[in-house]
Image 1 (cartoon, rainbow, N blue to C red):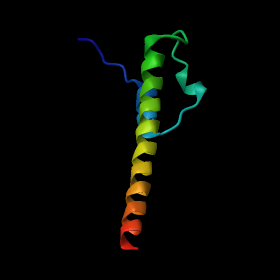
Image 2: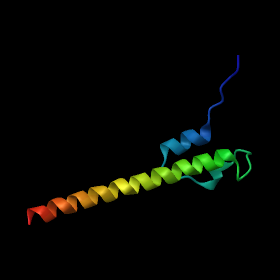
Image 3: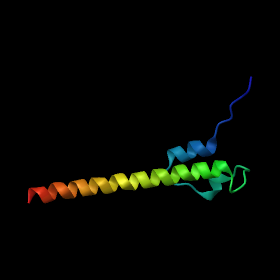
Image 4: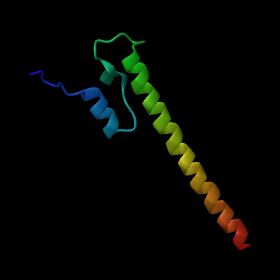
Length: 68
């Protein structure tokens, strides 16, 4: 029976929106697929968060413009 090791880096990144380079000490090369995948998820989360905030601001602005 194989034991499943917890993925501490991925779990920490799910709990926070930012990360430090000290959390990426996994023994993998810097350009490894694991690092690229984790960093890609962080970028995607950051972009979608800011896009949703921008849509909210534009929606509120259009509501106020219609009331005038």
